[in-house]
Amino acid sequence: MKTLVVPTDFSSVSVNALNYAVDMARAINAGIVLLHVYNVPVPYTDTPISEVAAISPEEMKRTAEERLEEVKNNLIRVTSGQLTVYTEARLGEAMDELEAVCKSVEPFAVIMGSHGTTGLERLIMGSTTLTVIRHLKYPVIVVPPGTSYHTITKIGLACDFKDVVETPVVYIKNIVKEFSAELYVLNVNYEEDDKEYKEETTVDSAYLETMLEEVKPLFIFLNKKDVVEGINEFAEKNGLDLVMIIPKKHRLIDSLFHKSRSKELVTHSHIPIVSIHE
Image (cartoon, rainbow, N blue to C red):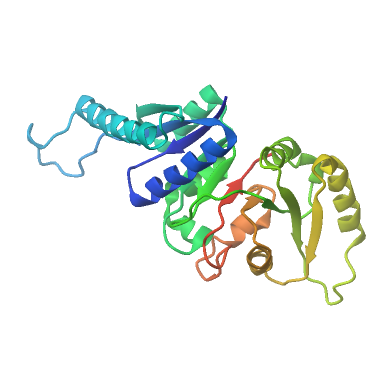
């Protein structure tokens, strides 16, 4: 059975991501691993902490497990027992524990929420999610606040056609086939004459097309100075349901880390982002 790992801190943002994950799990016949990572508070004062005020790791674990069990029971109830849910409460650093769980279950995807209200750019405010996108080698689906799951029929892949041989085509094909979706390969590149693209771009796109031919990709060349704006406009106009990015290959993710920028990947923050690595 496929598995979706869903980290939660029980906030409204993570609850929304969990709701998205539940609906996706039911659509693709997957189980869910609900993960909560907690830390023992470190005092930043020389003043002794009273025994009453101090919370032991054992107490924190018990509280976390109780909350997870409550969420699990509620999910089983609302899905009439048709959803398999496992829970994990772990002491440690979020990224380390998430990676350990993923190594154990080899998930179809990790699903987590972004912080803020304006899409991927606001994701910067959620340092845990940002760290996961940058470093976790498993696919991560980032769900913007207020976004609910609906049938996935159109998936975008942001691609700059650099080192296409390293493109994670296996996962790309798997996710496209899983949802029987259309795949749009999006390349944003500004040229004074939008009919002229560099020869190497044409060669690389042809090579990538061969690698992905099984899922019949549609190649879209967008003549825009701003990568984010180009993908943003296409996603909005064409109703994309997911947009895949490759953080270490594509400059898109880095372009969003400059504080001076005010554009978000998706205008209305309704389109989840899928982070995949080579």
